[in-house]
Image (cartoon, rainbow, N blue to C red; front, top):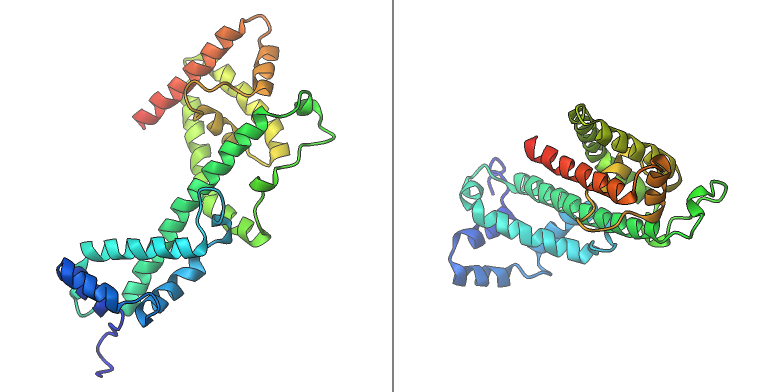
Length: 261
């Protein structure tokens, strides 16, 4: 073997599978048996990129994650057979492609896990016992299903969501500025931020996340009771149907804002 040639030990069977017809693909699939060298190499690249916190509602176990990344690799190979056929496309470049696929897949799955947690957190807020929001001396414990499995996973999740959290904060700041000519909407948004700061401290959520979650609630869903009570206390002279209509208008303004950016 010429030591100067790029090493294509794992690229070659994959590019052959991607370039040949369906019958040949099935034959090469049989050659690349899950217990074979090719898949051992693939799994070795994918496995270290898995987060244990993905093993959650709407998430995946590690075997499921590996299978998903394998399938995405085959789909990528079909579309990029010409690039892989180039002599300079070696195993190192294939490793980088596979690692990128695994990281992107991990983020997509993690967002689904986070969405499931937020939905359960919404239910948790809505079903709190009467009087609990005012009991500052005994903050409610986070349900076990919402807790991060380990400190290591929590650090990983914080790193992964840092950019998204910054984007949400910046987006809501722009939205707030877009309401300059709408005094009532600005007052309502400010009240929700105030509530978000007090509630978020107990639930370890920022005010931005609190408001963002409220704005994206599905149409027709009722606000949690403690939020309704807070808004009534802020505007006791206004019928709640009117307050509720203002909330709907704020959500509509948010949707229109998103369409324009």
